[in-house]
Image (cartoon, rainbow, N blue to C red):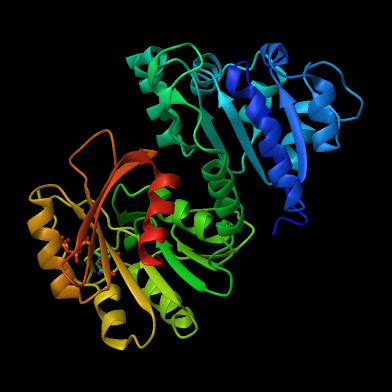
Length: 391
Ligand code: CTP
C-alpha cells in the first residue's frame, strides 16, 4: 500500500511517545520508508536504538549534525511524502503555530511544504487551555491536519480529553492523505483569474480590484492534485502548468472556449467586466474645454452563462462577488446563470476577498444546497472547493 512512500514521523516529549514504536511498525508492515526525528525531550520516553531498529533508519535529534551537503532539516523535508507528528505536545504545537524553529523537528515542519498530520496528546487541562486551542485552530486553518486526542483515563491520573488518538485512526488518516494527493489525475480543469481590462484608449482602461489570488490558489491546488491545469489569467504568472495570459473579457471568452471541449471542469474565478467601451479610441483621448466626458459602454458577453448553455459533461462553476445580501443574490445568480456550483464571497469585508490572502465563502449547488467554508487562507479554501466539486 505504501511502497515508494516516505513517512516522516516526528516524536515529541510526551508519555504517548512509547506508542509510536507500534505506529512505526504499522507503516513498515505496509512497505513505507519510515524516517524518525525526535525532539530532545522525546528521548526521555523512548530510546534512539529502539526507533532506529524499528524504522531501519538513522534517527535525527540534533540540528547541527550535518552529514550531507544540505542542511539536515531540508534533506528530511525534501525526502518525505508526508510528515506525522505524534504525540505532539502543547509546547511543540505552540512553537509550530508561531513559526519557532529551535530544534530539528520544529525546523523541519517549518520547511515542509507537503501535508503535515498532527496528533496531539497531553493533560486534559493543557488541551482545554484557550491558548492551546487557539494554536490548534491556527494550525488547522493554515492547512495542518489535526487528529484530535481522545478522552479517557490519562497517564497523569486525570480523566478527560488528551489521550493520543487510536493508532489505527492516525495510520488510516495518514494513508488516506498520501493516497488522496493525486485524486484529480486524468481530469482537465480550466480556471480563470484576475480582473479583465477593457481599454478606453491606448493609455487608459476600465478594470477592477481583483488580485487573481483565488483563481491562482485553485489552479495550484488542482495541479498539486494531479489535474491537467489551465489557468487563464489577466496577471503575469509563471507556473509549471499551462498559463494563458489574456486582457479583455472578449479575449478571456475565446481562451476559455478553446479549452472548454476537453475540460472536465471550468471554474470562472475571474472578475469579468460586465461592460466595455463601445468605441475604443485609437489615439489618446485629449482633454477638451468641456467639463465632462461621456463614455458609452456596451455589454460584454457573459462567459459563464454562455458556457452553461453549451456544456455537455463539464462541471461549470461560477464565483459571485457581492457587497450586500450575499445569500439572496447568490441564490438568484446560480439560477440565472445555470451553473453547477456558485462560490459566493462578501467583498465588503476587508479581512477576506479582493487582494486578501484569506477568503470565506458559501458554496451553492444547483440543487439548492449550500455549505459555508469559514475564513481560511485561499489555498485551504481552494482545496475545500475542489473537495466539494469532486466529493
Ligand atoms: N462572469 C462572466 N462574464 C461576465 C460577467 C461575469 O463569465 N461578463 C462570471 C464571473 O467570472 C463569475 C460570475 O460570472 O464567475 C459572477 O460574476 P459577478 O460579477 O458576481 O456577477 P455578474 O453576472 O457580473 O452580475 P452583477 O455584476 O450584476 O452582480
